Image (tube, rainbow, N blue to C red):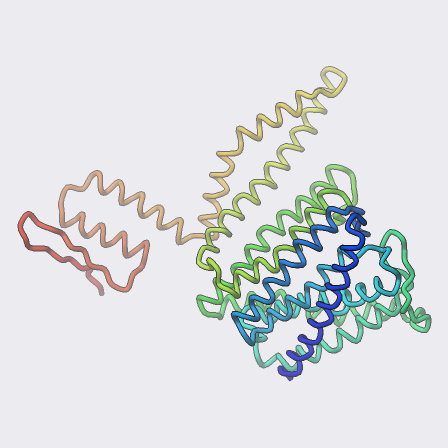
Length: 407
């Protein structure tokens, strides 16, 4: 069954590459045409010339450097959904319907299936593989039924679906509900599988899965900022990125991180620096959200105060809020970093505390034997090596060797 699955994925890759070629030809013929979502030729160019080639490049690199790993072909299949966002409405009902069909039936499914096979290309746990493949087949069938039950596409022009089957109209709601019900176990598996791999996998697999943590650390605060806080403060619809600049940035960031995070993990490029990236990203993401809340909250509070006192709003509220943000930046960053170190990077926090204590000992200790033992103890506690030796050169030609006593 695994071999059949790989062949089906390769077949889907061929369809995705054909669609990308068609979208590229249409883009070259109509380079200034806007996309249907944001009505922006710039966004359409970014998707066509940056996001899609990036996804394809990482997919082909994985195929070349890690043969047999299905994550690479699945990433190429996902690129068909990426390029779908650059397809203009004027391409025609039938071509647009084909792009929409691929995106709905195969593109997004490939992303979730990729999570099940990440990072080594095998489903975990392996005993569930036959059942998961059967579940995938059922999902494909039901998503097909959902697509053929749509009379129009969810785009501004409400373009008619040329493949709409009127016979499914009466059962459209039932098909949609059953489709969500069948898709839900797959969604749960895609979210739970990386957690299980992290808990029971090797150290290398844990480092690879941390690249997905980096993706989550960036996307979750950005989602809170763009889809929740900003709409609440501006009175727009919550959980809807809209067609403004924030929505465009949200889409670009969301679609660029799967190839970046998965590529770094599978190709193992600077994999051991991922802890540093996660730490810094977590600190500055929380800091950005916190300062944004403080800024807008202080502006609203000060404007209300000015209105009460002088009868109208004042630009001084923005100036004072900006000064408050500048004053809070450094202490807030240090506080967030300290709390994150204590909660998520305890080893780093403990090591820093040990080194700080050793600095105090180094200033106060005068006995050479005690100092040597302190040095060995610090190295043991912070770096945890398998063996420790300390050589001390005396005044004569002899060298004294000390080892940390072990129980």
